[in-house]
Image (cartoon, rainbow, N blue to C red; front, top):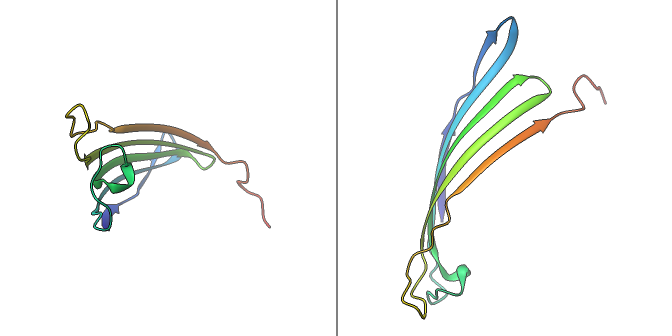
Amino acid sequence: AFEIGGSYAFAFDLFGEPMQVEPLVRYSQLTITNLPEQFDVPQSWDREQILFALLLRPLAALELKVEYLILTERAGMSVEGHTAVKDNQLLVQILFRTDIGVHR
């Protein structure tokens, strides 16, 4: 198994307010060698993942995260003859921070 990725945050002012944008890309791969590949046992599948994400921070207390995950899974063969699983994922998340400016 391995994973490699990178991101870079860009900061700038937008209408006088600080704004941050961070694109992110990650690639990971998992090869299962200790289990026979079976369609009905997801733990036995080899996986390859590519993640594209964009983090937007328009305010110190607000973050918008949009991620798209492309999954390639070698799932073995099902009783019906299927060998692939379509499981790409989209995540949209809004995070509100309530501890901004609080000193501990």
